[in-house]
Image (cartoon, rainbow, N blue to C red; front, side, top):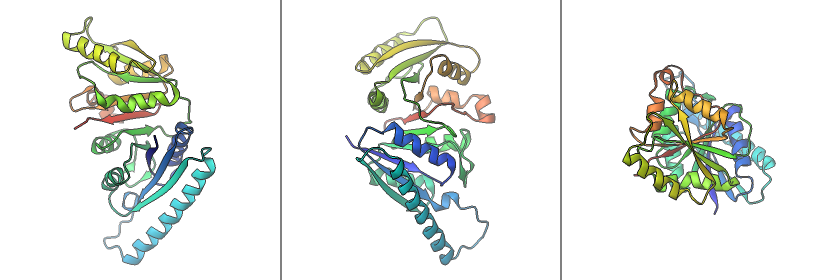
Length: 278
């Protein structure tokens, strides 16, 4: 299977770190990497009127940077079955990403958590949550600022078992199979016993992931859900955090916690967000 990976870039050091992570994560897989740059996303000019010559200059400079970035990535790749393409647009970032996902059958978007962007700082607060919530066509893997690749031996999947999980879990299974990673199902222990609904969803979840190494862990309910997840990541040496972005779900509850609304959710490891299936 050839993976189609979209890598939005603003040419910052952080976006390059995300690109390096992508190259190493899929080092042994046939992939086509699409470097996407949206000029309107990084445009910080305060001019009311932008001349066509100014736009053409920006296009020319961006295309040159994209070519340079592609050559730099080729030099880093160790796989002859890695292919590299560029996408340049003057449309807004969200619509450019959505169009690229559809046009090139993108299976995953990988991007950094902050950089020199037109959305001020791209940190894991309202701006990043906004991006995740808008990109509903494929999963998004968010790489923390300056994060170096570590072989993902442990993948955490926090859940409250209030949802029936089916094909939405396919990206999680595919990620696990890249390195035979162990999937650790993490449940915050809000009550001593699971409801009948939760028990049923847990049994079906076990059945769905039975072909992958896995285990069930119970997290004590101390403090915020964010802190519980951070503690779990540290206690079990988790390498990637995975959640499904349902409406009124666990991830939404985490994002709506007051501390996150104030300072943002800053992942300390790569964070894969899987959109709800329509």
